[in-house]
Amino acid sequence: MPIYEYEPLEPCKTCEKCAGRFEIIQGIEEEPLSSCPQCGQQVRKVISWCRAAIVETPDEHIQVNKQISGYEKEGMWSHAAELADTHSEKVGDHDMKMRALDDYKKAGYDAGTLEKHAKSTKD
Image 1 (cartoon, rainbow, N blue to C red):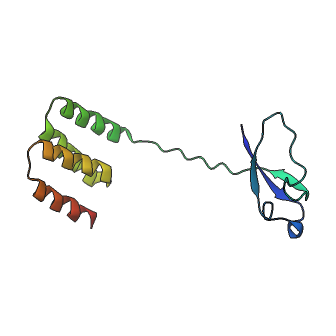
Image 2 (image 1 turned 30 degrees about the vertical axis):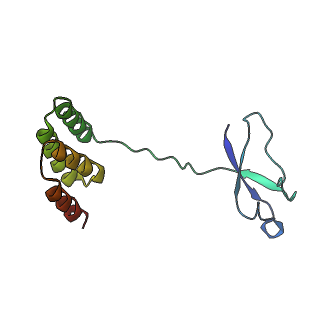
Image 3 (image 1 turned 90 degrees about the vertical axis):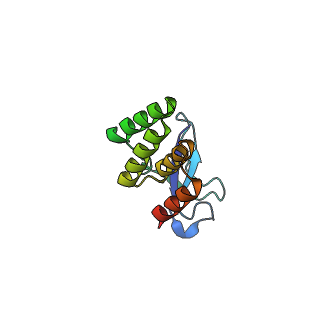
């Protein structure tokens, strides 16, 4: 069901609910509200700003993720770690950095050295 926004016609005569804009879930077939459901003051339906965000993942990032996954499936932990580490530095992706550190551990690298590396990249 859609969410609609309403605002008071007379802002000085409002309750807490309708003092600013308020949202209400209504079916498409329902009549718009003419009054606040809490205090009865007159309201009007307003056009809402679209608050959706579209996040696109760059093709390069998708390809690198596929390559890393391929290395991981083959048990090539060192290759996966190096690629993830390099790419995470390039794009500033903390999750990929953690993935690289995990792959380094699986490849047999010293965990103490890796922890120092992870802390130095956060600074």
